[in-house]
Length: 159
Image (cartoon, rainbow, N blue to C red; front, side, top):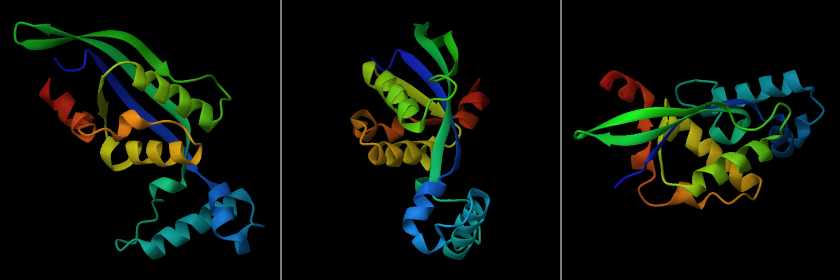
């Protein structure tokens, strides 16, 4: 039997100007807005497409939005029962606190994760930021977890 809980999640992030200052000390004196522009400039130069979207390591998590539902097997299909909708943590929590709470929740029970761009953005950000904060994220590295990430666009089209 597969997971009995469904977790739809989405990260909201801001550019990590602290990391940029560590990587490029010659620009450490720039204010935050100018440092964000520096990150975007560097990304444009490094991305073959010319996109200025920062790589996952340059994203600092500020919000983790979640929908939690129970999965019930019914007549060969599934039924979902909403349990909670909201954000992880409290207003003003730092990134480490948000990630620790999300990771702790995910480690308790097997989950079916649903995200719009989980494989390409959300999970790489969570994994990298967890390493930065020395948080245990073993369940995200287990074999098969990427296959359990269901793109939300596909999920919503199926129902």
